[in-house]
Length: 359
Image (tube, rainbow, N blue to C red):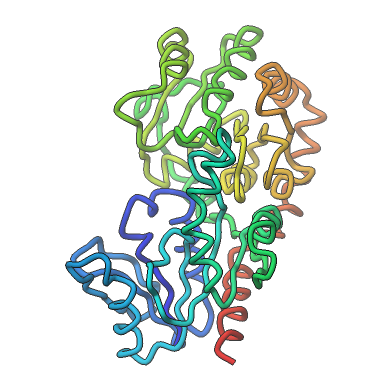
């Protein structure tokens, strides 16, 4: 019996891309009778997708968490545990496990290499104990191998959220609900430095000088209590053309994707880049970063820009909004790209990989 760690679905991760990925795997997972789902008692209830649940009551002493969890799993005849996110591996967890690694980023990734390695060290200690590592892109696999040359790593791409298409068929008046005016560019991302929200804002502002009728609709999720001064300046000065949205439901998100002229997703670093595929599923072209995993995901169905160069970002937006031949070519290329990121295939590969670890 294999247990899949679903504690991510009991915290804010359920609102992010990782939550979407986990739900997709569980929904399409074959041989569900061979699996159990791990969650914690007295926390949010999760959708089990017809897989039996194991509810773990954490010890009051956090230092005993890993030891207590291993004992709990052994007592329920579990042979293997798979963590769906690298940050959920507990310390002192003496039990066979594998893990999905989405990325190896931390807040020092772009600013201080020495501090980055120091903060990364505890995770690397945990990953060394993994029987197998699943990376969500070849870029992520490369970064893992650089840090852990002897690790066993395979790549299973994330599947895109196909429900975006059906959700978007519902009628929703964006003007009345969110004061969104067409035409608009859509941004998806949070305030982490690697997401480059400031660069996206500056690129849009440069584009807006040439096309002032456009609005930027930024779906940023949770907003910090204190915004970075440079971002706050842009938001105040250009408030008429920039609309911020925090958490929104799937129907609203799908409708915003569908009605957008383009997606703007120029991160400095991504482990995958799920919004690119979500935009493709609604035939919304994207201007995306030319770095890390994003060319691997966007392929020939996106416009690429240097995330460090607002002028280059603006040029990409101008091209995707005015060059109809380019726009048509990108849209025509979307189906073949999306076919490589099928959710059902992702779940089948998870099943094959995890069951092979029992041998």
